[in-house]
Structure formats: C-alpha cells, structure tokens
Length: 486
Image (cartoon, rainbow, N blue to C red; front, side, top):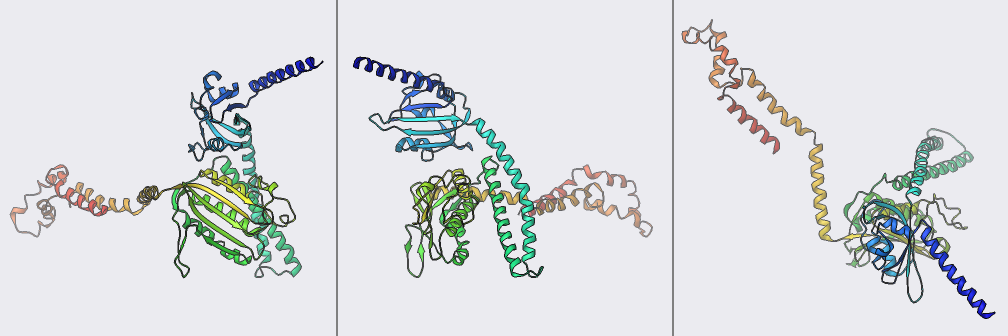
C-alpha cells in the first residue's frame, strides 16, 4: 500500500507540474522568471510575443533588462533610479501593478503594460515578473474619463451659480435674514463649495489621466519655490492655532534668526509643485488639532530633491496607509468622518509627482502624526545655469515676437521715402527739383534762359529709373533702418 501511495504522490506532482506549465503557456499575461542576478530562466509565449524576442530559447540566459525596456506612459525615458522594475529587482522588493510602456525589441512598438515583481524566498532567490497588455483597459478608461470630464464641467456651472446666490443672501448689504436662516444658508454654501471643489478635482484628474495636461519643466531653486508656496498657508495655520515652520536640513544658523540654507536645484513644473504642496499642507492643517505643529522641509539627497511635510495630527492607521494615494479613498474612522474632503487630493499629488519623474510616500502611525515625502530629480548648479540660459533666450525671443511697435516704426520711414521717388517732386536731384517750380514762375520772371525748360519737363517724370537718383534714397533708407534696429 505504501508503494502505491508513493506512486500516486509522484504522479500527482508530475500532473500538477504539467498543469502549471500548461497554464503559463496559455495565459495572456507575460511571465518571466529570473535568478537573483536577473538572468532569465523561464519565459512564457505571451511574454515572447509582447517583447518580440523571437522565441523562448533565444531569451533564456539573457539579462531581463535586454527584453524589458520601459518608459513612462507619457513616452519619457526612465533612468535607472526612476525605473520601478530595476529598483524592485535590485532591492529584492515586491512591485505591484505599476503602469509603464514596454518598448518591443524588433518593431519599437510602445505597449502600455501593468507590471509586477514577486521575489521568491529560498535558495534560488528567484524573481517572478508578470506583465499584461492594458491597451483595451486604457481605452475603456478613456471613455469613462471623457464622461466624467464632461459631466464635471457641465455641473460646475450651476454649482457656481448656487454659490453666488448664497453669497448674496448672506451679504447684509444685499439681503436681510435672521440668525436661523443665516445658519441654514451658511451650511448650504459650505456644501456647495465642497461640491465645486469635487468637480474641479475631477476635471484636474481626468485631464492628467488622458494626457491633456503635460508638465512644463523649468529650472528652479527648490528651497525658494517651496518656501514661497508654504508661506501662503501661514494665515490659515495661525487661524487654526497651529505652529507652522519651514526649515532646511543642513542649514547654518548665524544668529538673530539668520540662516543659510542648502541650495537645491530641480527641473520641475512649478504649477504641479504648487498643487502638490497645496494638497499636502492643506491636509496637514485639516487633520492636526489646535495646538499642534506643521513642519515643511527641503533638502538634497544625492541626485534627488527630498521634500517632507510633517504634522502632529491624528495620523494614519497601518490598514489605511497603503491605500491613501488611491482615487477617492478616504480613511473611515471617528476622527475623519467630520472632516470634509473629496478623496482626490493625495491621488493628484501622486499623479503630479510621477509626471515629473518623482514619487511620493507617507510614514505614519495612528495618533502619532504623519510625514509625507516627495522625491524629485535633482540637477547640479552647472545644469541649472545652462538651463537658465535657455530660458532667458526663449524669453527674449518671445518678447521680440510679441513686440507690437517694431513693424510700425520700421515701415513708417521707409514708405514715405520710396513712394515719393516715383512722384517727381522730392526724389530727383537738386537740379531737377529747381526745374519743376520754375515753369509756373515764367510769367513773372524776365529771364529768357529759364523759359526753354518746358521740353525737359517730361524727363522729370521719368527719372525714377535713372541711376543718379537712387543714391540719396538708399542712403536715407539705410539710415532709418539702422536707427530702428538700435
């Protein structure tokens, strides 16, 4: 009986292995298994098709990076530090459902994929890479996005109208109401503003999701940028009775509140940065009770710019921490139910950061405050100066193209000079100019030598093409143009 049982166990294991191989060969998701060094040990047909490597035999033994060439959804090349697949493979950390574009090796076709990495414990320390083509999903999502965008745009107008009339009703100069009615209208106005914010957030999300908003990069000094954005929230923090400070690691205190901060350069979209900081600081103010503190900091961390917004607020539970950057997600507990929000703010932060080649994450514990980190690419001072030269040149060119007086000034002096040349009164040489006014003076002039010129009168009208006359015209025109250019 024992022999029979062992035989059944062996046959069962073999059949399971056959079934597993059959499943891997027939699923639509690409599967690649590598060793701890990243060398491919197995690849299924779906992965062969998407990567266009030819066959499984040609792929086995190659480094995974030769097949899985990735770029962002916007078509921007990923550096090694930005590439989520490389980071997951190098650190032996899992990667879940990251959306990128796969560049097919033969045709250079861009395929939008959702890729994951699962490290396998054991002696082999293998990595299982799975990815699927999400072209159809993105098309369906695009239709949904278009509907949400249209609906949000249409509904935002009546909401703004409602808010306007409520403002008029609450204004003592335009309406007279009692205290109870004022309370009702105030609550209605608060709800209408919340609804308007929701529609605006929906519009912002859909525009970036479908690629209608693209980052406009420019070189900036990150400390100055973040400080200027943060300073707008000082009145709100004071109103909420919070201690709000901005600082920089590696700062040197010279006494009398004078500090020299670390200079950190970045290449970012300043509008995206404002949206990121606005959402993070606004959340910190909303979720921090009176008497608490908020601290904003910027520092250079190798080739990255690291920004953190730290608060002493209610914190985030471990269960919620992994979901807070998802669309419409809001932590549900007794402390957050009374605080308004759309559930889109942190999703917008994640979108904007990733669009600029960065990432965002949070560290928190419930009841112990939170710290939100934003990591962005950093540039050197030399790169900053080079990029600033390009920006200044573009600004000068734009000013020259949009300067309205220039074409009018250059045309005015030239027109009067060239057109009279064909008339006969101003363009001829001084001798010809004297011969024109003399004929009318013949009746009063007794000089006989002047009367014969009636016959030269026709030549006076034809000399525009005579060589001696253009010389003063060209000289005057050149002087005028030089004056305009100066």
